[in-house]
Length: 338
Image (cartoon, rainbow, N blue to C red; front, side, top):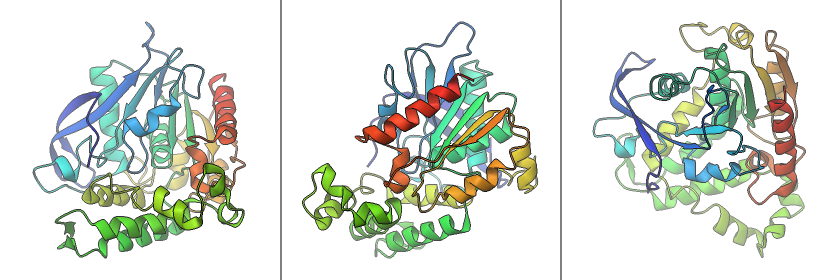
């Protein structure tokens, strides 16, 4: 169910979580690309998105690309629950409730304790990775020079939460889900989850204009079967539930430092901020980033650049999509020039 590790492991030891529970022998899987400069000032942190492992997202890292390993030292930390870092699928004990704050705190330890890095030129993230980028900018404002939030937000909006409730309901309706966990992998549940996701991840226009034909699919059913029916079956179902919980409870202000004060959390950010929602994203809505933009009162700069795409949420992960890829590349190049 999980990819083979080809990176490294940071052994974090027993970690005190936001919930008050202890996570014994927590492991953070990560991979690095490029060369760290002598001044250690060329670091880009690139957290993973929902269900993704670093091998799924490293395509963005290429010479002359959006994230260029010829110029920058790039680190992909795998989010807790993704099957490589500590997750239900690789933990002997019951998996405790974890948050973005917990994940980012361990990532911070990786940088400080193992890599000796105290400055980040950029934190770049898409979707759940973008939510982590926001947490980084708020929690470590003196460390983050720039942050790019691609199809993400500072907290999970109610509409986004409801979308995820539908995903959970589809997955857990499978009879393999018993007493709060999956006792085996849910074949029907994975397919149902993919069908729900297909409707939310892409836009109305994507289906209206049959854009899927451009990728060689012969019918709408062909697209659904080959693009979505088995998308999540490559992951452990209990891992997926753990990451959905992190996503739904995501909020940069939900910690001791900010006490739930959203304005205070956004006001703590000092970085150059680039908010890049998908213009047709259905669950990370442009309007949430518009609202956040006006609250980034202490950021060095703050820009809202919606991706002009019909690909919905997928616009932020433009594999085999040269137009959206070029848009993102140009915006990141401008951000890195500041």
